[in-house]
Length: 319
Image (cartoon, rainbow, N blue to C red; front, top):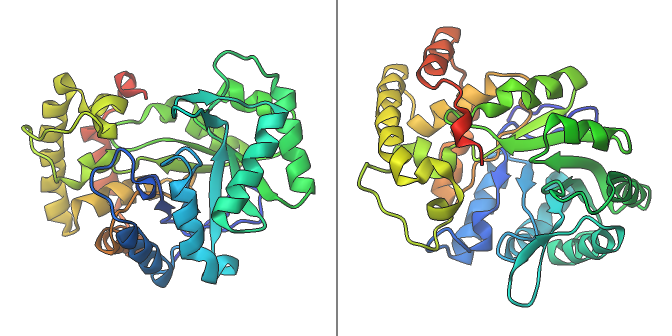
């Protein structure tokens, strides 16, 4: 599978990665650990080398399952995880980017992942209150690089202004942001800035949490504990029906191209060379196989432009 260099780092992830949010088995319906392990095995077999997780995904479960699944091939893959979202005994989540918390978090992640190092360590969310100075957060991340616990530093969900502040303290190699045909707000600032600065750009939710696979209809319902029912504006009832109808238009384009809808959506992202790796989630080996197949063909310029016109950037879908 094709690889692209992640910013100016020594990491060369596969263009299709593996998003392991669902591996935490929390907020994604019925998910079996055995199926996740089979999905990871299939990903490795197909040449996927980049696996993205976070401690908060299932409160440690995603890291644990991923670490065990990748242990036999650890030297052949890149593991990316995150820091900053912590939880208490009642599983209430908060942001803590203090030096003390980061040191505790990285050691906990290393234990769960059953590894000696993390390839890409990303600040999951910026501190909205600014209670911890940016210097404190990123100086300790520099120290973790020097200690060999992490190889490279990335950020997630940062604005350009926040990214600039982080770069003044540490060598940031990547930015991870929500980016898909519906959620294109990064095209206004974060994506062009990343390209100019030669940062790796990692779109998450590339399939809009399943919406761009065509598996939903206007009457689809989601349980109260489903992440889509409370965490994504695309699934709010006022938006959802119209979004499904737009997906049906995209399905017509996909039929003309002769490729599955999800692969078309992934290819649209990879058309931009500023995108380093796309990390669709997967709960089964079949989903991994479908996602990976998107790396074996490319959109024409005409198809790319037609799809882009159908999905104009809409800032109302900011997460």
